[in-house]
Amino acid sequence: MAAATTCFCSESDYCSDCGSVLPPPGVSETVTCLACGQCTAVTEFLGKCVQKSVVFNKLDARLLSDEDDEAGALKGPLIDRRCSRCGCEKMVYHTRQMRSADEGQTVFYTCVQCRCVPLCSSYGVRCVVSVSCKWV
Image 1 (spheres, rainbow, N blue to C red):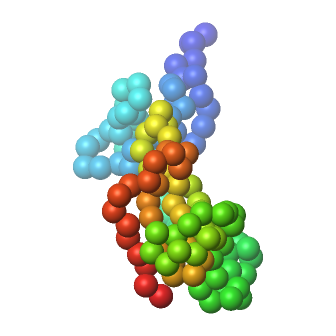
Image 2 (image 1 turned 180 degrees about the vertical axis):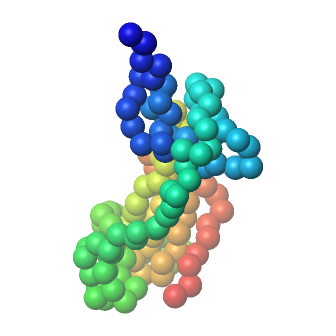
């Protein structure tokens, strides 16, 4: 009795030795598995049709509801911090990880009155000297 020569019993789209997805057939007489090197005769792919499609998920309702908010309203925690441009005592802030994970996060403050955005470093300890302002 002959021993089985393959490890997997599957469609011809998959390697019979390792189970990896085979590349599409080309001009060659065989299709070679990129993972293990097993060769499959190209005749096994005759009559097969390969199709692909891209399906986009529907937008989350929470994302769509932002359009209903007051135009230009600032979002984020409100803190007591003096604006260097207009002197207002209230600012909102948000944080972003701008560099690698071993460095601190960058804190972005925005004045609620004039929308000036001084850029501050990790944990808000030191502020950068230059100030950029957004004009609305």
